[in-house]
Image (tube, rainbow, N blue to C red; front, side, top):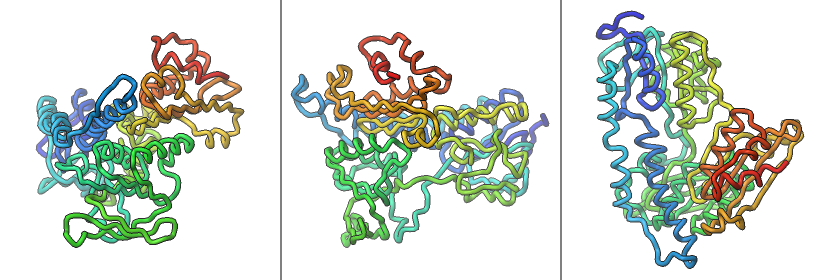
Length: 457
């Protein structure tokens, strides 16, 4: 590759999240000159403003729920969340990430730039007052909250703000019925807040199995969370005191008004491309992200690749997919056209309690596929594994291909869903049949040792 100068590099990477870091490091290890740019603190969303800090909070909420399940069954007293202490604990996981990421780049010999990046040509990027030239450019700028078109939308909080709340308001409203709203609503409710979820139709968590979603919604209602379905928020304003917010709109066609201490945007995210001036780089994009081919190369600029939430690939907007795509982009930069990412069996988890996890087809998708299927829908609440922890509901739905014995989809709602779904993902990704997965010897008594009862053909 060419030698680096102050402004010319073999590779320029936009974004320092997991995808951007991975590509930059892989190419630098092969002797490429690499520059990396980010306008936010280095380290990306997942580690600082998303999955990782969220799971710290969700872990505390889960512990409260688990202990409540066993009250009167051997546990005495009530646990409670101290919000300030929990946020301080969360901070220990994120506070050093920007500095450690910079140090990692320094050690690797990767030039880093703080600032907003934008294309000035097909191979040129402006950051601040500098213009950089890259033989190749990788876009890994992630996603941002979608614009909702609500009057007063600027008053909405977002997931990042929720994860940094110094004090928890007594009443919170989450706009949108996706996994972000569900997870944060559960955390807030377990911490003692009054919580509302406002969703524009009657099918929240639309990409998950409806039967299990209904059971989760019922469980969250029992926790005190109020669901406003078929509701549309049309206006957000300050209360007269200026200390809270008023949401106005419609619910089932009737006027709707709600006062809260904080309203949080949980209605989806979109590729973060608005400030990149993609047109100047000859890079096509649509609402899904940068338009790429099966090797994650831009269809309109052969020197540009995209990875992670910003790419318009078939992959779900999840951290494991960012890693998968980063590895594919790295390979294709080093050897053109060598790798196509394999998205088979991508598990997705809603970290409420109980957790909701899914991989593969839903029952509806499987019935439309034309395959001869068998659907095992199982209430596991009375099984030893879950009864001993007082878990209700505990449910699973497993969809099998009758002809091949393969698993087409698996959906789990319980406190062990994060583990169970990974067993199914391994089997589905590597073509194991239900019989083979059942034949595996698991430690007993564990969630794994129950698998065979979900896989009866």
